[in-house]
Image (cartoon, rainbow, N blue to C red):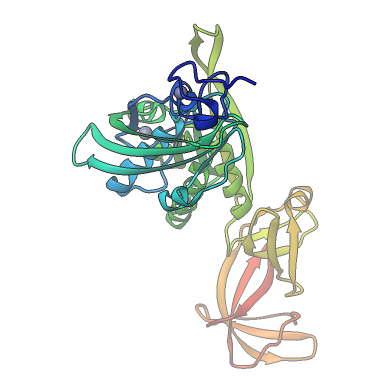
Length: 386
Ligand SMILES: [Zn+2]
Ligand SMILES: [Zn+2]
């Protein structure tokens, strides 16, 4: 049987084999390099928000510390541009010490380590030079692995991401209008809502980069938030509704034509209208019940029935069904001057006039002053004067 020889270098198979496709082990590796990536890579990050492209999609960075941010962006670009021979089906990134220790590699697998060996990150473009190493096996007859290394320079340049281009250009997609029914928003409500909105936007922005607030406009009747995304505006409206109750409506305005897609461009107005009532309001329903409002949220209203002095909860449907509305009332303060099992005599603290009413379902004490409400000629005792 005749000995075979490497057609490239002439070494015999017994010395340099086994031959692979006519090549000795060394020549096979030389003819079939695995680390094919370019030695220069260009990448960019947004100078406004620090985001960069990851698999084609702009993402927010994990770190906003400039040094860390540049390495985060450069590392990502390096790995995204990692190009290996197509016979490599699996890649594992390991620390360089781990790479040194690897002695067994399945066919079609590569282990890669990389480390920055030189960098200038004080100004743009930032430049990071990496030393990248690969250990791989692409043929079953290989008894020695591929071991290749390369220096790769990554240039990190500044740009403005599409989101920030829109943001900086004053773009907005929707207006979130916060109003209250039949009244203006109070100062406290405005402050609370502004805080709630900021909190919620921080949360939304983690998933919807267009969920930014372009502008906030204070109006007599309420607040307008100019939002980068309609979806985010809807989420905010819902968050406000969950906290305070109210109703949401949407309207669209045609603002132009998208020529590329020949589709109309619309701008959404999302309105959240808070309930007419606030804590402390006196309300009545169509059945003649009188209540004091104790609290409101997305589910309904907590009330004190001023005839029974019991707490009641009404959902928004019942509030509507029972035609609950503000009632006109006169406030006064009066002292209990005498008590009988069924009646109580009060003296008005301003006019000193006395009057008698049916004893309410409330513990009263002679000599104490109470807050009273007069509604349609009938007195209600709200409670003791503090
Ligand atoms: Zn050879
Ligand atoms: Zn940006």
